[in-house]
Length: 456
Image (cartoon, rainbow, N blue to C red):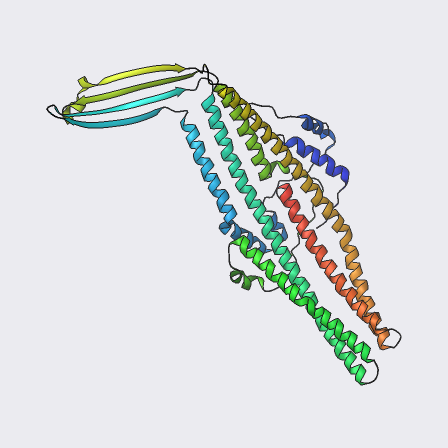
């Protein structure tokens, strides 16, 4: 992965994204001061028009990571809860839409009275509220926006779950790599202790040097249980995220593999439709639209309501009379109802809906700012790691060279044994630094893909 990013490019790209992410509403106008400021920068913005790839994890070319993400989508409880919320919102949308259509009900009865025999009746009743001022239409629009927000929230849970699984997988590979390095260093210390013992028997080294080599070996061995525990905890984290037991994943995760890293060059320009497709931002935008529609609904409820109702009924002494057109009774009623005095309830309902709209706009703006912060932080981390990694690799090479020279000098009798031990510790520290930087780079890239809403 290659990354070159200047603050100017990131700033204008974020400004463009801010302008592109202005929420669209039904009856209210969202504050546009920040958007208008961002629009002024459009003439100088150079954005990347490449399409967004939602399945960003495929950039890591790790089939097991991809499989674990897909398995998590099938079994994770949080995702199941979000899916249930979508079902609820869809049903609420159907309920709200039903108010736009007439209602029709059928009835039937049979009555027996002393001395008068049995009488039968049946009928149809219809009613329709004329949506003159659009209250029902706006209520339906709000419900549909709620449904879209629930769908976007479901996608947000999926995106967050994918990032969690990918991060846990990277942490597992890091823990396994650190454990492998520690095991290699234990073998090296064991060999050093063995050779020091032979030198001590031959009178070429002191008992102090032998004890120092044993202490160095013991210190390395003491790290292994903690590192092994880190591997187990990473496996447990993946098991919880995928809805499986640790034993079910153990066979697939036992063999250590390299820390996954994205291949290809990462372009510095943020895509033109970047944050616009973030699920949490789309959910917040739909909530603004729903709150806006409910403001209009509350205002429409201040006006009179108009209703039409009608009925058809048949009655008779026996079943055949119910099919006699001469016994048909028809009725039609038109009514109007206007609020005269309700103690200010309807007007205060407008105030309530207005405040809810303002809350939704504030939540949208907060979500947008958080998204911009996540993108900037991830870019900054990646840029720093890109500069740091070559230095760490060079330090590792120098540490290995120093260890070799220290051992040769010790064997030649021109250096103290402590120099060998210090050089070995430097090699271990440099190895761990390189591994941590590799993992941090992958984790920062995962955060960036999640913040942007996909890969590009």
